[in-house]
Image (cartoon, rainbow, N blue to C red; front, top):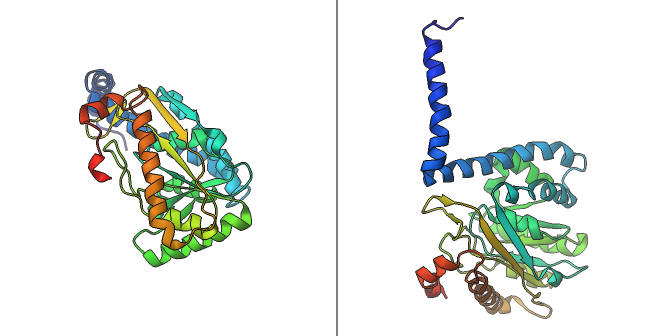
Length: 287
C-alpha cells in the first residue's frame, strides 16, 4: 500500500526537524544530554551483551565467561571520558577464595568493577537483572549469582550454596552490601549477608571503595560529564575463627574503614570533592 503523496513532505520535514533538534538539545540542555548519555549507556551494554552471548554460550554457564564480558565492557569509560584510577590492587589475595564488598552508587559502578575485577570473580545481583533482556542472559552465562531479596528463605539458601562454591570451585564473589544504589554521596548501612557468607566459608573480605561520582554525575541534577573516579582496594579482612555472633561487629568495622577511605578519596580532587565540601560531608548522620 502506497502512502498518500502529501505524507512524504511531512515525513521529510519531521526528519529534518529531528536532525536539527537533537544537536540543539545536546548543546543547549544538560538534562537532555544526561538522558541521551544514559540511554546510549544502557543500550550499548544491551548490544554488547548480544555480541557476547554466542561466545559465552560455547562454554555454557561458566565463571570464566566473565573475562569475555569484562573485555567487551572495558572501553566504555573512554566513550564517556571517564578516567578510572585503581590503587591497592596488590591487596587481592593471590590464590584463594574471598568475598569482595563495594559501595554502590549507580549503574556506572560497572565501569569501576570491570577495571579491577579479579579472576574467577562474579557479582551477586538481584534476581530482576536476570530478566533484563540480553544483559540478563549474558550475566547468567558468566556465572552471576542471582538472589531474590524479597524471599529471605531463598536468599539464605543461595548464600549457603555460594559458601560451598567458594571453597570447592575457587570462586570469588562481589557483593554490594548497601543492597541498593545510593546517590547521596555517602554509604548506606550495610546488610550483613556478605559478611555471613565470608564467616560461613571462613574466607577473607576484600573491601573496595569507589570515590564519589558527584563531580561528573548526578542523577538528581540530570548531570553527566567527563571526570575521574578512583577505585581503592583495601587490605583483606580475615574471618578465620569468627562465628555468626561476630558478624554485626565485623560489618560495622568494614563499613567504617570503607567510609573513611571514601571520604578521603572523594575530597582529594578525584571525584565528588566539591560536592562533599558543599554538603558538609553527606551521610555523617548515618554512622
